[in-house]
Image (cartoon, rainbow, N blue to C red; front, side):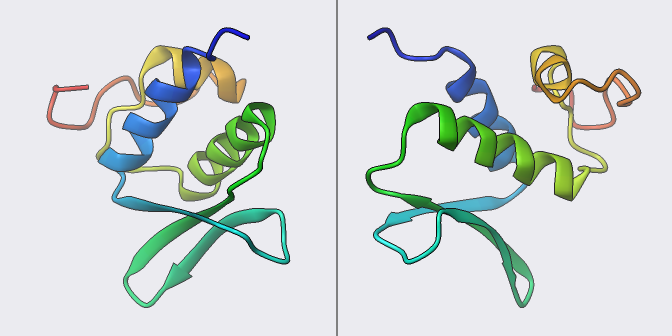
Length: 92
């Protein structure tokens, strides 16, 4: 199976937002948590690419990043066209 090209752009967006990604075996499906002043996205080691993609999108939706450029493809995946086009550093 061919890797999903959207995964890389979603991961890049999350990194720019300062989200730490952790993989492991958890009792839950995974998801975004806030621990003091940082955000961590927990992913199952055996999670499917489709479920991981949904977790990435859900994390971006919940954070609604201000000051971070959200690429057009990510906005398209989110199904939202009301994102500001670039309030970040222009490197995205």
